[in-house]
Length: 265
Image (cartoon, rainbow, N blue to C red; front, side, top):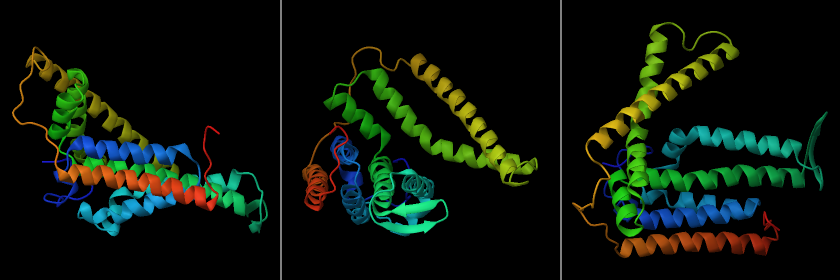
């Protein structure tokens, strides 16, 4: 069973049937293209393309927003902050006292906000459509990755789903003690930090126990055999081609619009 981050009903869809390495390659290619330029056109093209691919996961935009709202909020805050602090060049669009937005500052804000979302979604797609064991098998069989890295990645992905359960449990426990969702915003933020610290402690303890158990069972000792082979199919060719097409389309659109802003240039 795959890591259920976005939708529990993704079994049988296109992306879950693709090899993890092909999805990883496509995600890395798209992410690298977005990171190479700080402009809203390339990031916007990538983001729209990713949203159009949602049917391959069997999820709707509404469900995606419900599951990924922290990323959306962070992108909005980053876009607003960038637009507020960026150089005030170009045509003035809005001015109210010390708040001033110009055409160039808004474009910079859009670039940062869209860029953050465009970078986050490929990773979420990969996580939501990939069985951790399949990813570990592909890394070890095809990339010959070290066993400690492979087992660490497998354990980490297996524990992601448990972290969500741990967060809910900690929230219920704090609510039962009367320390959650009470007080002014500062107190609530302090409660949030306390719950986050508790989750971090739980994660470290669980990871330590898992590492000791895996070491005791001889994981990584001696040559390995495989219960199932990691294979590629036509779906993987399509996934790589779609990732390449999105990356090329983003670069072409940004260059044609004159917004391509190479970060190393």
